[in-house]
Image (cartoon, rainbow, N blue to C red; front, side):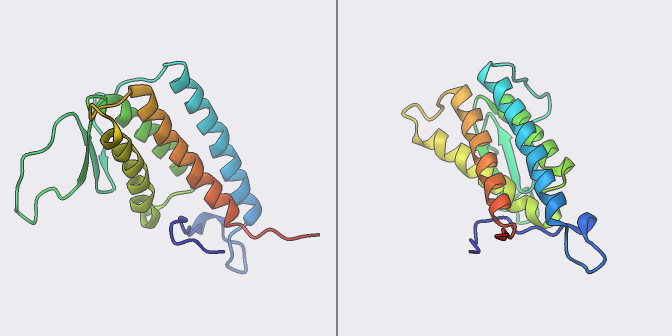
Length: 164
């Protein structure tokens, strides 16, 4: 059944002659992404994550260690911000997830906003749920990866399954 929260995909590179994307290719892409996510999870669990020199800013989401100055000018940056002292590590995870999902490719321009919004929402919700408003670095990174895994499962469930 269609879930409005499930990322709906347009797979132009996997269209067959009759115009429908290849479910087999799509499932193989998801399987590859699951393996790559597992590798990323292992790196974070063993604290082998890295810090980024460049903070994430894309798909209307920005990650920083301090809140931006308030500005009411419509034309300036209207991004949603995740504010955390772990901004460099979280940016690294976002970049890793972008690479995993774009390489397959499971995310395209039309779906990237929903994808990164969901990752940002779980990260921000975790930060706001902690007593100190900061939380634990490893937990923050892991729940972000967890949400990416949920998204992958939703993608897999969106593929028609037929009984033989």
